[in-house]
Image 1 (spheres, rainbow, N blue to C red):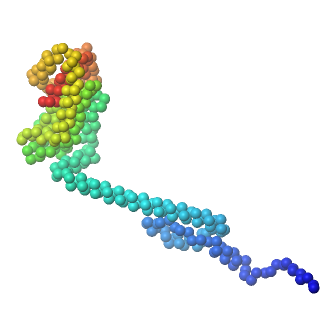
Image 2: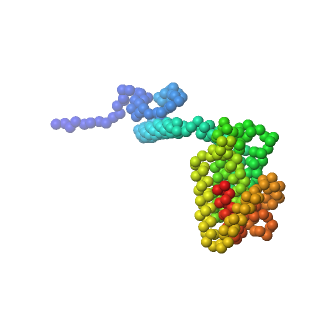
Image 3: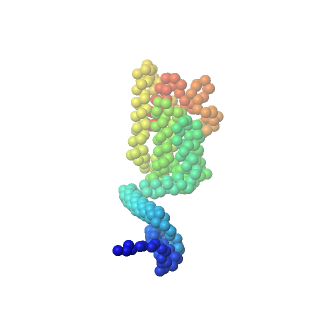
Amino acid sequence: MQGETSIRCFIKPQETLEKSLEINRQRGKKKLQKRPNYKNVGEEEEEDKGPEEGPDDPEKAKGAESSSKGAKTCGETEEIEMVIMERSKASEKSVSTVTEENTTDEEKSAAACGADACQSRPFLDMVYNTLECTEDDYYTLFVLCLLYAMSHNKGISPGKLERIQLSLQPTQENRVYNHVLAERLIRIMSQASQQDGKVRLATLELACILLKQLVSSENGCIIKDVHMACLEGAREESVHLLRHFYKGEEIFLDMFEDEYRTMTSKPLNVEYLMMDESILLPPTGTPLTGIDFVKRLPCGDVERTRRVSYCILDIGD
């Protein structure tokens, strides 16, 4: 038998080279998943660019597929975040509506005026921030004197003071007072009742005078129960602090009666206080400067006892 011989040779393909390359390119091409387009911008351009741009080999096709998966994951994450934000906004709206339903019309108007005042009135913002006497009461005393002068100035109409939320004399029709200002004044009294408080007695008494004007009307006191409870808390702190001096001072009763006699016979005169040049100096704690006791900080246990007695009598009045 004669062995069959096989000859290897180049056989010309039936289709051209360009056509075979085009077929291979279409096989390796996969449709990319687009990222969700919420604004529907540029969709036609992307569709037109789609057939022209594509991976030329399988490796590029795999890279395109992985990028499409990443884009899909990002799109799903954004959709989830949008849903969570919408739900949180809806819950905030429901909470605000429930809060509005539980408040009265007077409280709503007062809260709206207070929010509007903080946003569009920098003068009130400065006043409220200065009344926060965290370190000392140097600037606080000046602001209290300013409020007292504005409330007693006959050239300023009460209507203007009501519009700027600084009216210290509520009328019979309007039984709503400035809650923010009342809270700042009560906070001054609470800080004065502390053992290491940096509030002078002149500042404390002036804050008490302004608070009385703020919550007193023709029909009596209109202070809220919350503010009254805060006042009682400040007074209880002073009483608790006074117990330590009651045990140590033998002449405690005489000192307490002397402070009460001084308060009733010589109340604070704000006009004379504002004319005193000693309040321009930083608060000092030594009696060697010659400054009156109510215009400086206490020095020694005897003056601290006098100070606590003064706080109890002034806050409880």
